[in-house]
Image (cartoon, rainbow, N blue to C red; front, side, top):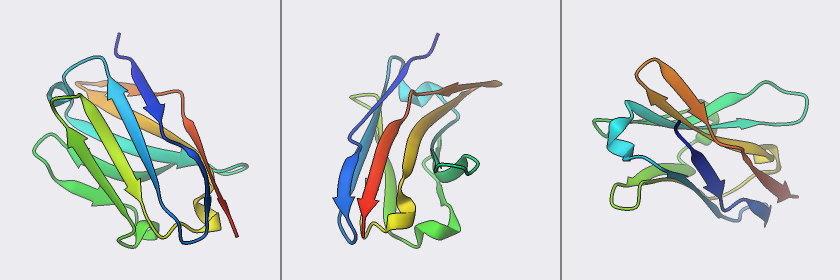
Length: 115
C-alpha cells in the first residue's frame, strides 16, 4: 500500500505564494510519474503538473509558468511551488503517484486564494 500525505495548503492573497508537499512512504524513484491535480467546487479534477521518473516536467496551460513541480529524493517528497496565485487557483490539491498500473492519491489539501 502506497501512502501519500499532502501538506502546505492554506490561504493566500492574489499574487501570493504557497508551497505544497507530498510525502511518500516509498522511494519516489519507484514511481514512473508523480503528479499534482486539483479539483475546484463543482468542477472535474484536473492535472496541474507532472514529473516523470526521468525528470521531465509537464504543466497544464493554466499554470503559465507560475508553478514548479520538484522532488526531493532523499526525503521522498514531491513539491509544488505556486507563485502569482489567482483566485481561480482555489481548489483542493491532490498528490498522485503512478506505480506500474496502479494510481495512488493523497487525501488532498485545500488552497484558497482571496481576491
